Length: 111
Image (cartoon, rainbow, N blue to C red; front, side):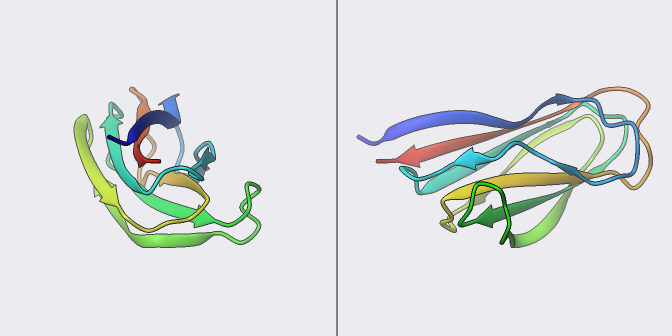
């Protein structure tokens, strides 16, 4: 059986603007399959984009798949089978949230 690891790319981020926010970089060297778990406690919809890179500073980042929307106060998930050594999420709200926070986990399986 393979190894399972869970890391947060956003940890209770209280977004209060319409600017883009970059999540923490996650090292994926020993993992292949990923499930992205989103807990949107914000009072506004958030648009998320998965990004991958060969470098931990994201000097050559690429969008993985299409961006996706998560409704206000909704929990959901996405899957990603594209491999990059480093991965992060970006988040942006079309309207400024006034309450709540955003948490995004990356559950990794491999090795």
